[in-house]
Image 1 (tube, rainbow, N blue to C red):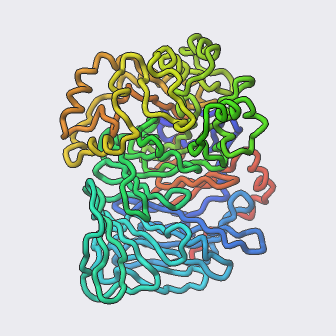
Image 2: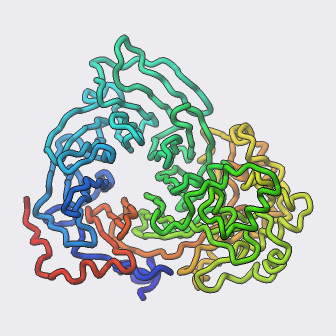
Length: 601
């Protein structure tokens, strides 16, 4: 097994890595790029991005891939782990002059073998609707740049809609468009629809309906990325001002906010069940935020530079379809559910019941997500129960067991609910009579409890009160703060014996020394560090990556989890396919001579 990424041999590129599922292997014959395979000179160009669509054709080759490299846009059949890529035959190829494609998105609702709707955003602000199968360009939005002249940073179809799409710009504005409407020949006039803390939403004021339908102004500086929740009802936005803002999209209301440790936030994604949001950015961290509690629950430190993409692995994440948050009933009902948890695996509360079952080892809830960064490294992370539920009261016997296990990492592939460092958290909470037993069925994930007995401030702050979160939502000068070093974390960085099993949270006990600073920070409206918006590093668990591997020579810009592979891309324009464990055999029988000839189109 190769050494950890970013070691002494800085140019050594890893072609495989191992997790508890097995070995992931790079399929060199499944690499997509420009037809000539020449590395792209990426100086000053926009990031390479990749979009996928499935057109459900009868041949079994239903996947289509679109990627931009410099001024060029390519559209291929994606063969993944099945067959080698044939770069000599793109379905469509476009070269743009005067502007560059920056992002793109397929409409999965309307995609067929004969037609796909692909939106493409550009560096000069325009958005183009094209059909790369029919080779048609049907519409151009913001053609005269009257709506916004700044670079398009993110474009996505509104979930469940065949005609609505949302476009974000580096100006900090987002616009809602409808395919059926025109953009008009004059600068649009707007009328205020709703305003809140550091955001406003305007409607377009005109006699006839025209684009844009809505204009969102969010935060300060560029709006770097947005992501719709799995149910399409909520929208998470990350901005250059370092804030994550989560909106109820239809109601146009702010649900919650979070501040980066420092610098801008560059990327954001949702867990498959919509309960957690992960953001990454210029603080080199991945930050996990609870949608229900509106607070940071963990940070991950593994990258050595800016984090450019975060994504959840829906296929490795082991979480039920259930929604335990909505359980409401009496204490007797709750106890029944705990007792019969194993027999009711398909019930709507199975996830919570299984992990509270006291007569057997609890079934784990593990979220897998990944991140890639400008340090050319891929990191994989596991978000386990000891991080997600550190303060759920457990049985008395298990709590005593956790005292012994509090300082030892878990052995093997299984982590008990209170195992590892998380056990110390449970023990601290259970020993506090004022907090023990506060987990009522109406509130399965309670408001933040003290992570250690020396941190009364976190107990005093109520996360359920949206106003308290919003009172702390500060604006401009916040990113100038937060320059604290994380050197105390690096001492632990060599402890990697548990990495292939689970990421673990580390919690420092030194927080009592900084209570005075914490108090002052909270009373100063110009700073967010130490508040719910941005907890201190020692106040929340710090995840370590399962794996952290250097997989490219240039900065990484794409990470997509598919059913049988992982797709990454770097700024040189190479799109790589990593076969999941057990899937590599599909391509190994392929004749080596059938690799692409590299013919220039």
